[in-house]
Amino acid sequence: SHVSTCKVRPPSSNNSTTNNNNNSCNGIPVIDLLNPEAKTQIIDACQEFGFFKVINHGIPLEFITNLEAEAVKFFNLPQSEKDKAGPANPLGYGNKRIGRNGDVGWIEYLLLSANSDQSSQNSINFPGDPQLFWSCVNEYVRAVKNMACEVLEMIAEGLKIEGPKDVLSKLLRDENSDALFRLNHYPPCPDQHQLQVPLMSGSRNLIGFGEHTDPQIISVVRSNNTSGLQISLKDGTWVSVPPDQYSFYLNVGDSLQVMSNGRFRSVKHRVVADGLKSRVSMIFLGGPPLNEKIAPLSSLMEDGEESLYKEFTWLEYKKSAYMTRLADNRLRFFEKS
Ligand code: GA4
Image: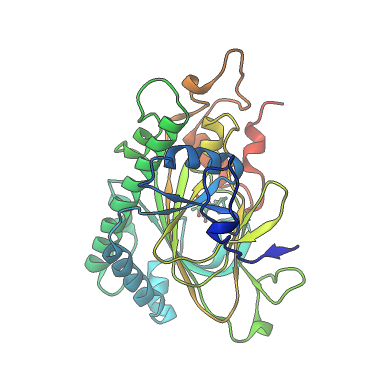
């Protein structure tokens, strides 16, 4: 399939009056969180793409570089050391295998809990300097979760729904929120003949992380300066996301698609590994408490509008999601026929 490369529109060529967001790369909206228009721009982006980049996010660069250094240190350890933190079931260190249902990719990762109560983390036997590692993770996760909550508050305001602006953010701020944090490493691959992982059709690129949507409410992605992330547009075209180590990309998850009763898109995305440069990404996956009902926000529903989905809790959805393969349409089982 065709994948377009980055074309940044020069400011002068933008004489659109309908689209109030004139800042984009490869068509991907760039939202300046300090811009008073940001709320409306985020709503537009969630509807059209389910994906956008944020700048002026207020997260200290130091938090990012500290954690990246710890991640690189870990991934550079000998295999036998890394294996001590595994296998990922689902938390811990994993290598090539993603989930439980046969998905594989050119990837190694650490899947961690991002709950405020991190006692579940104790089951991971982290090699090296676990104290330093966890303090970097906690410092980063706290800041990124906070930013995600601010964006969810802007979404609530932008939707002009009645009632408190924390209808969405409170689900992440809840002390029982079910959030995950994932550190991914897509290593270089000098000898592609030895590979046990699928190649992209018609190219020399490897699948790093196969196409999927995120089951949670919202995800926040940060990567180093290596490309690889691609998103699927409404028409099915894949678009490369230009790497930007100073910004974050946010994506709408399945749960937010449901809570917006289908107004927002849970964006399909994937990572291709180019085999030459190593890509390191860190992803905060914001989910609600396990017992939370995932249903369209009542304040959003218009007169006579009905939910497109059956009612379910996050626990039910999560269980069901972990039975699927990456590329499956996980929401399908919960759509009303
Ligand atoms: C996709 C989003 C998150 O990375 C993740 C992934 C999880 C895993 O890697 O274990 C899943 C995948 C993700 C969706 C379907 C199931 C579960 C792998 C898989 C095949 C941690 C998550 O929550 O769902």
